[in-house]
Length: 420
Image (cartoon, rainbow, N blue to C red; front, side, top):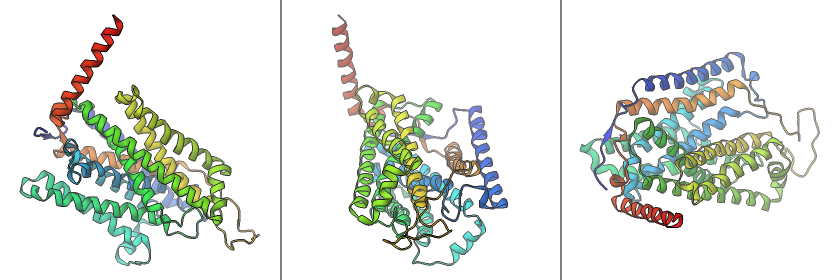
């Protein structure tokens, strides 16, 4: 691999400020929504005393999980020594921090009393996974920042491999902690299983890779910087593997619940009788978020189209949001069994599926977290050298570039012969 030069985003000119203004507008909408919910109380949302984690939590958890997964691009280069991925490591680390900040911002603003975060940061209950996650999230940002420092400063560049390995381990621990938020909640039939941790890790790989591909396409195209087919093919193939791995753990999770008699009711609710949650699961998560992207990525023709790869990545992101919605909202609306094996009847909605409908302020707050992540990334890339000047085939992988050129020439000769 040839030496890669990095440069700030200087080519997009006025369009940069226009794009930043649009993103800033969505951030302001989210702040306004948070203020509206804070001032009027959460009764203006779709949440209730049965559903205490609403749509903002769906976005927040998705962004946090994706933040862990998007760092995997850097890990492939530094930890697993794959040269073509090394030029992407700086952007990968930047996006990881930005996504985590966006997710945590939504989480804090959805608490109802953001000022109470000071209590959570000064008084720790280590029997709670939430206390652990404060250290995991802040530690992740510090470690990834150090990792970026070792990549960008020649003085400490020799420590890059160690920082990358430590960041890789920490991101696995972070996603494990996020998954165990639900894995430790034994009162909910949809949760309370240790497989939540590896399922969240596998899902983070696919979410992060899909977001990275979309960001890479947008950045390189808007700046007119070369992006070769060799790297695109590698990334889309890795995305396909990650989608398959995430699907495996989703299947394993539901099979484990079906094996346990006590979880048959909640599985029937999610898979068959859950109404909108069943449709979101089968259509949003499984069909559009898993099978369709896999078919597009590995199709002999569509798999070579950047438009199709981008579309598949968008579907993976939407499928990830659908997955988080089913887990978080669907898991809460299903009634808690107060006395297992007994019928309970009262006026407090015992045994009744709770109603939840997302409100506009909740949706705006969730989207503002995504907008904040985009804004942080764009500003950082404008100021510092995160983006390579070229990711052309001859720069990233000269040997693969020659093979691709030969393959393309062979296809053209075959096409000409067939036409003759």
